[in-house]
Length: 166
Image (tube, rainbow, N blue to C red; front, side, top):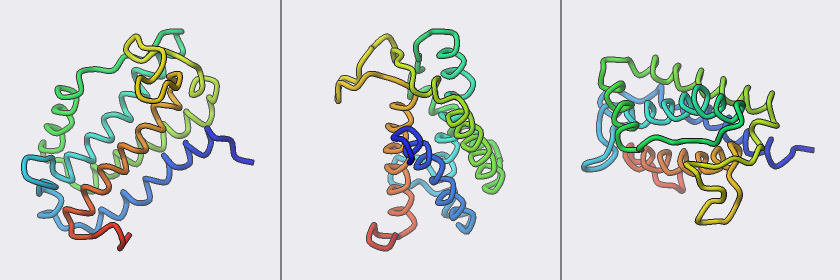
């Protein structure tokens, strides 16, 4: 039987399959903003990869050292990812980096379930103000799944798919 934690991690892993479908996009679509004033598809992929990288290299070590999770200012953090996407990196390399980072994070989550499930603070807060749920890395992953889906819907809309075509 799959636990709730494993199911969440499985959903997080499954997003890789959908991201691989973006390899078929032409470069114009990849480099076009998903909406007026919004990020390009390439920038969104870099943004998602950057957050996974942050979880691996900052959040997980912090939890292992008995500390809470500290998240940076979103705007400046995201800006760095957008700049990376505009640095000349190819679509396939960006997708490869996303996949490699997501797989690495999933492996850590599955191999260290105590780290994933440990209740910790997020920027000093014990419980999510919206749900009252105690914070843990697993809870953040659950929120990131929603975040992934938000960006997936933006991308699908930008490339001309309606949600009923998925």
